[in-house]
Image (cartoon, rainbow, N blue to C red; front, side, top):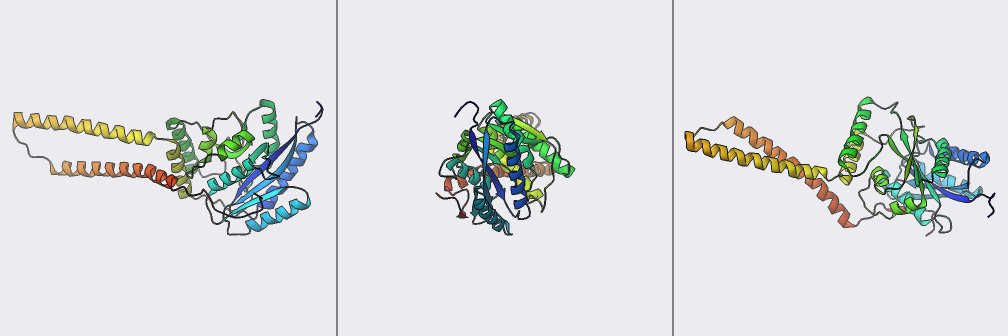
Length: 337
């Protein structure tokens, strides 16, 4: 290769999908258009050859049929369109892991791609930013370019407030730092993809994992974009549960707090006992207050139950990990082993 020749970089576009039949083909066309724009611009140090890995997370609509249609269409146009379909809905985290794992193994002749782009199917991650991500990686030599929202326009205010609170708690009490507004939309090097794919934990929180692996990250900021079609699959409860899972997966501070609180209560109880003994010796017996005693019993009983529930959350995760169950179950795929 001469100095004027460009190196061809293989790029996997990984798309987790759950009931996104209305968005699949539009997403594919827009990514294809962005690939053509990158090739035509001539302003990049390398040339880029895109392939696609769609992960159907147990969809109940026509998502898988749409993906298969793209795979047939891609075969005619010499575009590699691969897919993995789960036996049921295992969740977005499992779909992300499946896509990264497939990319790390290689979907074209067994050779892993040089880069991987992770993005949602609902077009809230605009494909038109892919070229800018690639440019930033070329200029800085970083391992990953990640997108973050600079605002939450279009979201309910209470949801935005809780999201900001979540990031503050994560960054304060965990050993990782996650940028407020960080998205799963990111461009990653082969080394980063391989590292994440080798982490077999079943309780996964990708935003935390991306931060934990510690690769050099650059941030691409853009304003919030509403989904192209369909409805969000995230309810208030599922988002709350997802936030709790993410916090527990990367923080042991709640356990330390429980232990510290127990020590404070035990110390206070010992001091109170000594004071009561001295009062009894000096002043004689005193009739205790019934109401205050019952209140204290109920209060500390509730605290004990809450702490046991917290410990149970950690033990439950250890229990699930020790079972050794797979993160997902593959029903069908056109990726050859």
